[in-house]
Image 1 (cartoon, rainbow over the protein chains, first blue to last red):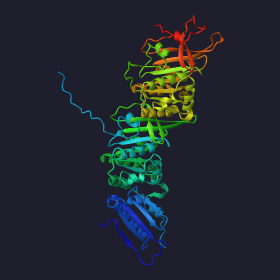
Image 2: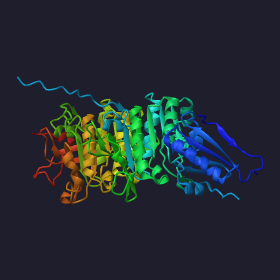
Image 3: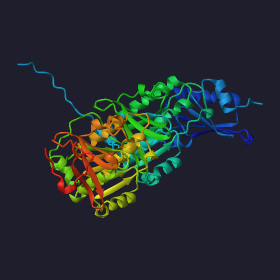
Image 4: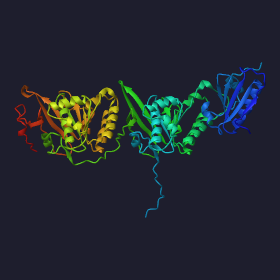
Length: 108
Length: 495
């Protein structure tokens, strides 16, 4: 499994403004990490198709990255774009909380 | 024959010295090595400072690098705080001796969307520990997590795991926690920590601040239940390791002069026992300070160092006054035998003064100590038990074999009962000074009310303070009372 590498799904015609750059912090392939990745993919495909990029960071491999985003809990999802930076924690199984937490607009 | 009992090895617990003056004494060597210690207290009690000193001293003096995970202050702020104690965090970080990781926990930033754990925190801590091969860890204050995370079940399970992790990695850790209303810490951290719990307290009574430290629990180590006063000054924290545990100091038999030959005569011609404590009480202007100054001067003349705590007058005032009664103290100051330490009684509470006294004694290592007057110390005390505090000071002086003199101001008509808080019972010798006015002619009288372990005169004598110094007149018997008193040449002590 590839880790720490951005998975880009960026189509050509998206404007910068509503483009989502998301970073998911995990620590190894734990059940919660696997669930979180699956949940995130599903939500993004439902709500942000074509307008997002997900980067998965495995802190077991890059522990030095934990400090920059003030990571305490695992999994943590950071919305790096659009501003402001938002942070949500947990395995993302409460879809409604994820949508509220990331401030996701429904697809137009 | 008695059956062989299985031998249980009584291994004493390994300790990590804190390097904080006094704390290592009251803990028998420091904090439990490779274990977690909880440090609790209300805001501003000094717990962060204590934790930080533990880390800095560990890194600088004991070759144990340390990591601080700070949940409250940023690296910059912490750097400033530590700089005020004379340590350079940036330099320590560069030399891989001390790392600080500021952990921001802000609730409004964090939404919870399902199961999680605190692995991120573990990874950060583990990363820092590995980077400098840390032996010590401070988590200050980990309770901030409770305000940031709502799932307390997860949080508690993770804290338990964190403390286990620290022990598995053989880290000596200090975890701080805010005092709760009915519990030691607001979130009950004490439930997780089995080995050592220390509580700090800061109270302000009548505008006088008092700091105290108590060892609530220390598994495998005998410790006093006393509260130890502590000071925070430019050099950081110093704890007064005054303990009321033992009464086993050695009683010395050699004697030291009072500085006044005629007073020595009243005590078998030899003066006080070395290491004893002497109380000099009397009303205003009866010559208490003069007596103390003579005692101090005699010590210096023997080549012994004397530490003189002045609570009423400045050193230069004392020097001037003593010159007027024929006593040159300045020569002893110049020879670095006599050390003055003047303090305003209201500058801190009794505990604070005791802490200072203790600190100075540790620094100067005198053979003789004068506290002039002790009255002001007592008046500076808040609600705390004055007697127990003084008892601990007196015990400490005895253990150190320091001969000490305390002067005590009493009020007219009540020459000795006014001695507050039964201080006198702690003293080995008690000299009373008083004014009297027989036939309208005022004079000062001195008598030895008690002097343990020796035959001493009990009769009052006239105390003559002149530019030639202090001298004692003849015994004032009923016959001589109120009549003229002969000069010192007439003195002859008869047992």
